[in-house]
Each structure stands twice: as C-alpha cells, then as structure tokens.
Length: 534
Image (tube, rainbow, N blue to C red; front, side, top):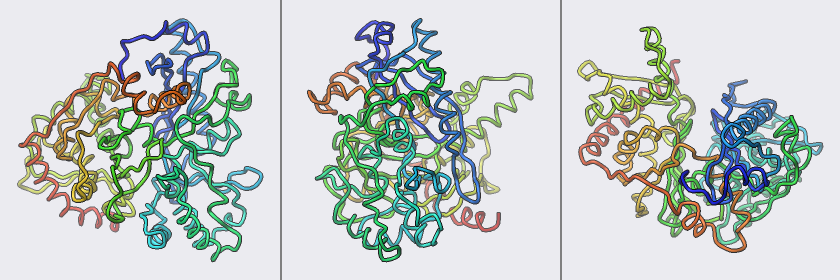
C-alpha cells in the first residue's frame, strides 16, 4: 500500500459517497480506516479497549463493543473533516472484521445467552481433543466448535436455548445488516471449511452433528452456524438501525453495501498482499500468528497447525500463538514512567523506538536472559494459563540491550516453534510479509523475526495500518469483483506502487536466536511451575 497516489480528489471521493470504510475490533483497539476505491488511505480513527477476566473467562461486554465502535467512527469522521474539510455522509461500501474464533451464542429471540467468550480462553481442552480425533482435523481450543461442544460436555444450562452461534465480526455485521453471514476465512475458525466447495466441510459437519445430537437430541452444529460467503459477494446493506449504531449523531446514512465480515487473519493477508500460494504473512499484536497459503494439503493433522482459509476460501496453514507483543508493550510503559520520574517524559512511540533500537546492540543469544510473554495460556506449548516471566542465571549479562532483545525474542519464540512443523512438511516461502505496530520502528523487529523464522521478512509501507485497512480494501473489492480476481486486483491496483523492505536472516542473529530458543524450550518447565505456584 502507498499513500502518495491519488485516483481522485480525496474531498470529492468523500463528499460523493464513494469512500469505503473498514472497521476492525482488535484485542486492544477498535480501529477504522477510510479509503478511496483503490485503497488509498483517507482518514482513520481508533478507540482503546481491554478484555476483562470475569469468572475465569476472558470477555468483552457487548456495550463496550458498540460504545467503542461509535467512538472509533467518531474519531474517523473528525479526522476526515480535519484532513479534507468534509465528512462522509454516505459510504461506497463497508466491511467489519474482528479477532477470530471465540463464542457468541444467542437464543431464538436474539438475546445473548452467556458473556462473549474470546479466543483467549483455553478451557475447551476435552472438547477440542474429542472433536479433533473424530474429524481427523486439528480443532484448536479457541475455535467456536470447541467452545460449543465444551458447553455441551459441561451441561451448561444455556445450551438448550441456543439458536445461533457466531464470531465477534459476524455479530457486529448481523446487527448492522440483519444478515447472519460470515466471510469464509472467519468461518474457517469456527469449523473446518472444504477448500473445494469454499463452505463448511459437509462430511465433517455431519459427524459433528451426530456427536452433538448424541448428547443433546435435536442439537446440530449445522443448524447454528452463519452462512459462509467469499470475498466479492455482497453480504447485505447497512440498515437505518445499523447506521445509528455506527454513528449515533446521524451523520452516516444507511444503504451502503457490506462485504462478508472477516477475521483479523484474513484482513492481515489482504493488508500484506499475501493471498496467493507460496505467500505468507505474520501479524503481531496482542497475539502473534503466521499464515501460509498452501499449494497442497499437509500430510497429516498437527496440533500446532490450524488449517483455515483466505477470504477466497483457499487453504492456509496458521500458526497461532495467544501471546504476542503485549508484554513488550508493558515494559515500554515502565520505561516511559521511569523517564517521567527522571523529569524527561517521552512520547510512548519514542520510548518504544529507543528500546527496539537498543535491542540491535544486544548479544545475539540475548546474553543468557530469558523472557516469557505468557499473559494467557499458550496451546502451542501446552500451557492452559500463563505467567509473564523474566529469568536470568547468575552468569548472564543483564544490560538494557540484552534485556530488550530477549523481550523481542520472547514475542517470537512460540511462533518459531510452531513454524518448524511447516518447514518439516516441506512448505517453502519466498518471503514472509509482516505487519502490525511493532514494525513501525524500521528494521529492528523485522530483522530479528527473519532470524527467528529463518526466512526473509518483508515489511511494506503500510505495515503499521494492518487489519482495518485490509478490511476496507476487501469492502472496496465489492465494486470490481465481477471483473477481476482478488489477487490480481491487489497486485495491479492496490499494491501497484507499494514499497517494501526485505530483511534476509543474518547468520549471526540466526545462530544466536537458535541458541536462545534451545534455552527457551528448556525453561518452559519454569513457566509451567509458575502457573502452578502463582
């Protein structure tokens, strides 16, 4: 993506109702991106929010969802006014994405039955294991099917009232349009999708229906899931009620077409132009995950590999780690507070940039330091809960540079373990495209990620924009979907002038990371002990 080309005058695009809006509900921020029909950014807005740990479950309230969306859209409208002297009143198209997986269950009167259970919950082990064995397909702990079946196994009272189950993106889209649909990429994180039909796998769905019915006669998963749609299909129109939810002031008019709602993995693929085979991307935020578009199916199911799809329904191997850059961000806040205490307050972005810059001066193996970023459980390493840890031995070298390098390594460690499996399967990539706020500081995280993955890592000019922009691009694709396939349109229009920087693995960094990772694996015993003792 680039921001220096203009297909039309920005103010005219906005005033004439041709601007396209993408909204993404991430783990720590709700973000909106307004673009022109070719993907050029016009305005943006954001709203910070946080999950709550209630009754030992990670959740967000639905009131927080709608309050956050309204504030995010208001910030986008204000930004459009400030930058272009005009606010959008009508939209050319609209799309919604959100963190994938999880569990939102509603009754026949469309009432929420239990608080939203997010992807971060890891209490579904028995259900995920039984479904995986039955379907011969890895069903991760966070998938919607695992949440539903675990509720059945636990004989939760709400189960007898379930009429509909969806994801966060599917829920928001439903309230905006009245349609219970889901983009196929997000749907593939609820239940396995058959890439041949680009719909739920019918044979596996029949098997799951039989399993649920054996516990609860009449209960079938096929009767609860939203309809799966692919990129380019219209998925409804913004209703007056939906417009009021987005913008309670009444500035935005109803009527805009919506593309299928997607998950943050799908928008990450679009935001990095990684939707074709032999392409892949890494998204770094509260969680961290890698997506690799496959040329063929893997030889067997692996517990650390999820099989999902692109927004077009093509098969993708996903290595998803629950814990990403949050712990690194927490340490940056501490250093920012220290700077303030010294009488030299600094902007958070400046603090982050200074810390990341210091990491490059650290020893390649981190100087004997270890960092575990486990704020929550981590299925890839078999942990149901997490305790953030910083560990060192008496002979380690504790310096700022080594400390920060180790924290960055800690954000990439679990992902590196999961990616080994794809390497063993013979999956080859030309490069991994990375995006997320961590890459706004040029060259540091990118270089260390290349060492961790043993693969060149490319970062584009829009690496910090990520999901909401990718969602806006998917919405813009509605206009041309009948004329050109998504991959061609992305390459020839949206990314035609894109500038990327590629970092190849540095041999010294790679050897250092490998040595660090060996200690990291051994030290997982300390992390496990911490979850039991604390």
